[in-house]
Length: 115
Image 1 (spheres, helix red, strand yellow):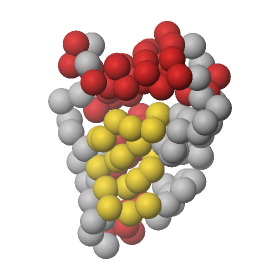
Image 2: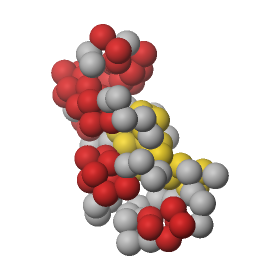
Image 3: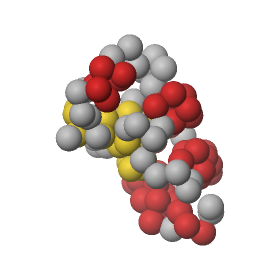
């Protein structure tokens, strides 16, 4: 079962797990306590997470180097542990520079080179 909800859900995640939730989508890193490091530490092994790459600030305004560093950091948080689908935290808007979108997908595609 995959559940979609925007914002912070950390207060109810234990209840969602008890109800049989398998995947929480999307992970919005700008919301309170919704950073993947925290989620893995608190709920890893009980729940899988989908999303997590910031589309509010980093993707539209970051450099390609910052994007690469964040994708690699995120992948390393869950590397070898499972339970994470690395993706954007929401849709990619039209104001995001093309080179940033291409870098994001390039790094995700080749992530095994970085782990």
